[in-house]
Length: 222
Image (cartoon, rainbow, N blue to C red; front, top):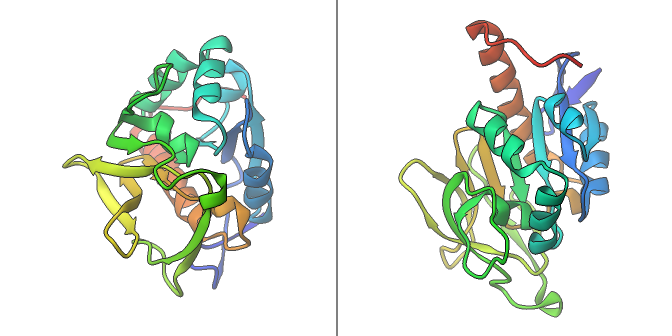
């Protein structure tokens, strides 16, 4: 099945055996699934360990970070997900998902995954009524600026040396970052029709699949 490239200007073939999961415990996971399927991706909801082990990449959606953190523990997914990330599973966290990836999160009442060398401040821009949109230039994405939607959004207040800053607001606030196979965004790309952020993540997934195939590390059975 064809997949739109990250530039949204060409179509490239999608690997037939690539599957991307969206953590479906809480939050706007349905919108991510629509975005992925629009791009021709085999996309599934992830709620069980078997489902988690079957995917080549995972998106942690926006929602309530404390609720998702609690449900990761309740569904016995926290440690298995940490282990898969340590083994190279590409993971993208949007909004609440970015909070859960961060190693440092003030005032989170349950432990995050703590796998990405960033500090994230929750609800940094205010309440729901303070939601806003902004045009962003994102490193790795070609073409016009990306229209980004921020809803009770966090910000990345510190990025470690191994973390690449991909996008900032006009005042320098970090709102997108990447560390190897991990991607964090403060905003909600799934709420627009621009699929370039999803394309960027799919490129990361493809890179991981190619590395696994060439290194002989294999893949879990489906």
